[in-house]
Length: 132
Image 1: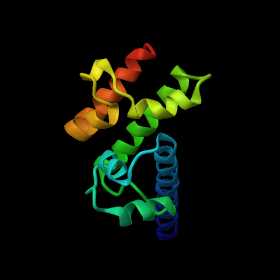
Image 2 (image 1 turned 60 degrees about the vertical axis):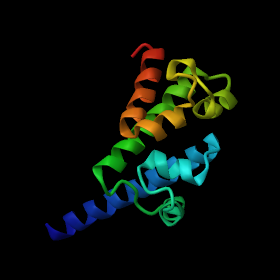
Image 3 (image 1 turned 90 degrees about the vertical axis):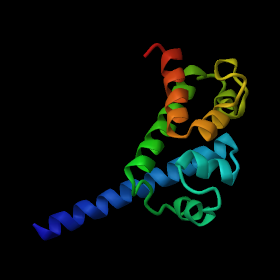
Image 4 (image 1 turned 45 degrees about the vertical axis):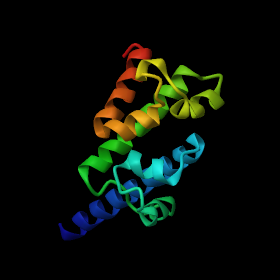
């Protein structure tokens, strides 16, 4: 029983490590600053050490807020790839592009200004664009 629990914990940590690498790779594709990366993850903008740990694949999402943020960020990426299947450059640039739907702010600026609610606004906008 104890061994099975340890294996589950190890697997969960490995899964969160894989999520960390995925979201950090996504941030590279989106060409976000370290400050914006931290903001999107809901951590202090000065916490570059955490970003370095995530790049190495250390577990992310130790808090529910951060785990949910990663899920929404990956959902945004999925939506963008499905909306722009022939134009990967546009899909990667979209988060840094001003949008009239967001009062001419970029999606990153919306998230910076509104926090988790802004992240949900961006995700919902893309879900609606896909007809979900």
